[in-house]
Amino acid sequence: MKENSGSNRRNFLTTNEAAQRLGVSYYTVYEYIREKRLVAEMVSGVYIIPEKAVEEFKAKPTGRTRVNPPPWRVYRAGAKVRGLDIHVQALPDQQEPLMEKFHLMLEQQQHLFHGTMQRYIFEEENDPSKIIISLIWKDTELPDEQVLHRDLDAFKTAFAGLLNWDTAQYTMKRAIIYT
Image (cartoon, rainbow, N blue to C red; front, side, top):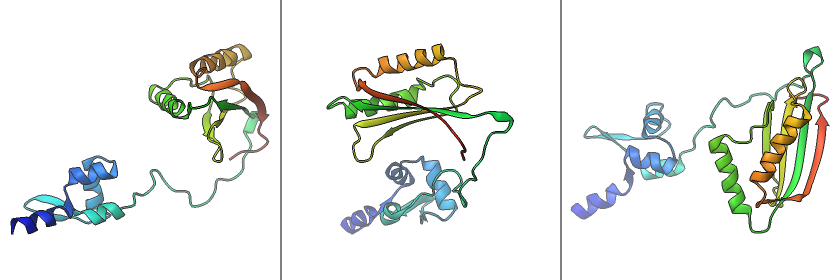
């Protein structure tokens, strides 16, 4: 009898185990149960969750999902959106350390580039060693050239052993319309 109950036990998870597998807190698992998004049974005052339910669980995207795409716009009062794209090649065998450095930059909130309203760092899907850094400003918040160069120099120094700055191509852009 014990063997059978042990094998049944493996088909169920505690809220903590489910939380670990889903990558969320156990409070979130309780929310999923309360919302009936995750099936669970109460046994002796404790929720048990079928392992299969956890494996098949699909979390909703965070935030609201768009019903309609945003409309095209222009700024009032003559403000313009400006951008700088930097295309640069990762140094050979540096892809993993580069990703670690980007994640550290995120965690420590470094290299925020004064005045930017958006910042993106992309990798090309077909060639992840090709990196595109996209910085976007409202022209009323675009820093003067000296500040921009100082921010860029600090970024280039931080990534000197990971990105080949000799290959960098810089493109300044002005938005015509935006979303």
